[in-house]
Amino acid sequence: MNLQADFALTVAAVILTFIILWSIRKLVKPSKQRPFLPPGPLGLPIVGYLPFLRKDLHHQFTELAGKYGPIYKLWIGNKLCTVISSPSLIKELVRDHDTIFANRDITVAARVGSYGFNDIAWSPYGSQWRNLRKLFVREMLSNTNLVASYNLRKDEVRKAVQEIYSNSGTPIDICELAFKIDLNVIINLIWGGKIQGMRRDRILADLLPVIAEMLDLLLKPNISDYFPILARFDIQGVEKKMTTLLQRVDVITEDTIDERMKNPSEKSEAATTKKDGRTDFLQILVDLMQDENNKELLGKTQIKAMLIWWDNTSSTTIEWVMAQLLCHPKVMKKVQNELDKVVGLDNIVEESHIPKLAYLDAVLKETLRLHPIGPFLTPRTPSQSCTIGGYTIPKGSTIFLNVWSIQRNPLAWENPLEFKPERFLDNTMKWDFNGNNFNYIPFGSGRRVCWSAAC
Image (cartoon, rainbow, N blue to C red; front, side):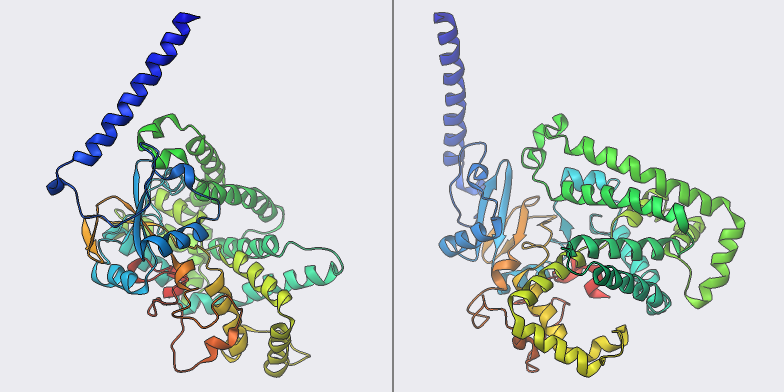
């Protein structure tokens, strides 16, 4: 028993000594080697502020900003993080140093899920990312393609409305329903509606849960991201789970890509419809991949990465819009009156009506103000050390832009916690999703602004 006690005391002494030496090293490190970092809360040795983080991180980060200012730092494990909650500082970041901060923060789940950063969302800033983005916006989101796919979007929305109507009196998961609409539309945009019947149902049945699981893993806190030295052990199994899910997706995507490359009649059919803008996205990518000029840009890996990730955030936004309307019946009544006036009682809403639905647009914008899709957007990382707000932001650190706090700032918004769509009807202010007004950036700003908002 004494031997066991002595061993335990020895181990404890070694650990304590290590912590003391580590702390002393941090304190006595020569000032010329220590960058002038922002202020911030003290954490524990090694783990930093990690044990003190709450689930409501956006609330906690906003509270810390009230104590330490609009820019502060904290260590999360071995990661140095900087939180910015000021429109002027964000403007400095995305305008003066946009190229430096044009990279996403690297996570294990993102690396694996994007086939090694081969998609638009996670690809490092550079020529490949610029070319992929141009390709995607030009081919997938061109006016020609959007017009050509209008009936498809309309049909899917009407099916959803019919489903809701036929289940009146029964609880419906709006978020899940909207997610299914997104998936149906995307599948048809990618494959051009050529996949029908049982095969289409199988693809949807296989992809829906897989994509949902991949998104959950992408958002799940992973100890490997905070302690890179532990990444090789994959303690939480995130890398293994993401790899397994990706293999399930590969079964669908690789077979379909190979089929397009080998089937002359399919390729010929796509070529004949290209002039009318009805070529599906997959065929466009396959044609570009087989072009000698694009071999360095596009391969099967890039195509697969671009096929499985899309902007699926609309389902969450729809759920928040419905929640706000249910909580504010007067606002809902105004929306209904506008629809009656613009669309009519005997007609169905068409996309051509949208520019005339100013109040509904204001409801959407107000919802995104209070409930941005990502309260910190997608964290960034600088490609080199630079200065923001007079403080040094070291290369490779993690940057959180606290959009949730900025869009509830009482200095910029009157009664910021009140759901008031009328504030977006003020014609003296330009409220859009392009990220030019730094008091309102639900989709980000700068080079890495959300592609769906930039097109």
